[in-house]
Image (tube, rainbow, N blue to C red; front, side):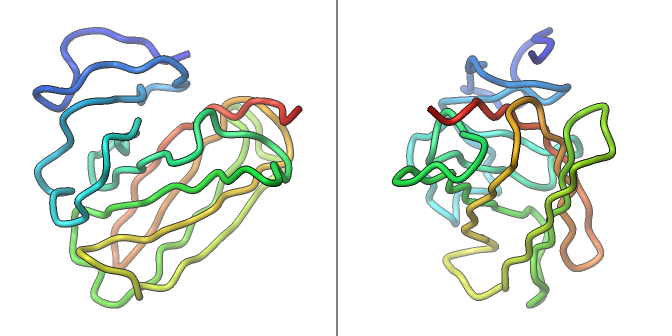
Length: 147
């Protein structure tokens, strides 16, 4: 689980249960740079360098192919995407395999958003590296076993 120390990185936000790795899950107020995406009141994660935010539509996130559920995450990037796709590579925290990869085109609006579904094969804490137009950030997300 995340280590929660000090105030949340976003004024008006609070820590939410269910995070892992160094980036805790948050709820409440969102970073001002995500305002153009107008995300609803969802649990979200900020990237390690606070260059990406992931708003979790499916919570908790489920490993496998969780039909009819969805693990939709709306990614909002802080820096202009300049038409570049968002590329994601992920693996379990503290393990090199298995690896998941996905890519989404820069064709959604408003703002710098990328809607996604990410399927991971096993539960646990997963580290994702996201890249877009010369920018990179990482997030850690907890996946539970699909029942």
